[in-house]
Length: 300
Image 1 (cartoon, helix red, strand yellow):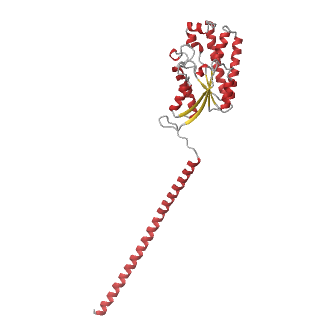
Image 2 (cartoon, rainbow, N blue to C red):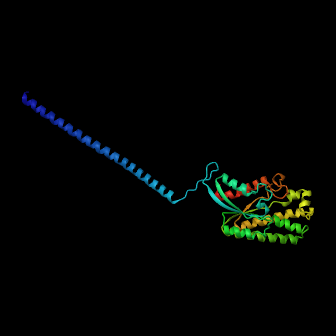
Image 3 (cartoon, rainbow, N blue to C red):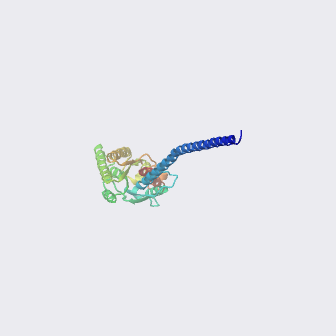
């Protein structure tokens, strides 16, 4: 074993070492390929997610630009101010007779509207002493104005004038009186609703429960021609008037507001000294009754 043998072994070891290095290089290349292959789908997934998010954001932006979003009303949160035009039609109760503040029910109604950030512009077309056959000018103004809402309360004077002139009416006279009122209220409400105005019609209270009727001394002073026997006739006729109002509302798409079931006109604490018209407290309650109906048009 001399020098030739040494060089022979050195050559073999070098060959083995080179083989090992080549093997390591091959294994490293395979690992790199595997890692690249593994990472590519993840990159694609991220790109795909980013693309999806971009598309979704673009769609949301386009939707926001092209549509108006209506928030769900919440009485405990600030609301955007909305203006609603309102006209009121009727007799002395509509004008606010008996209210020392001269606001009638329109003042409290406006306050209630403002309490929920609804700005209301109210025009009062009521006329003292008006009956259902006397408000054609009020109707004409309303049709010309074309407000968002019309509030109508009429019929008390139809009853008062009829029974003062006919304290002991026949059934035929009462029937004729009812037909006249029914035709009038149908015409009034029909003309207004046909012009796209949301119309609210109040049911009449039972006049005989007002202090001016319920208190004998006051009744004799205010309505000397009306007898005790007339009282139940008036009460029955009020119910028939209200049936006519309901039928008209159903036929025209108007809304009925129930004043018949309230104590606004019968509770002495809510009625003025004349025993017929509400006082400030009564008109405030009237404003709330109207408000509870009107506010439905904005979904509150």
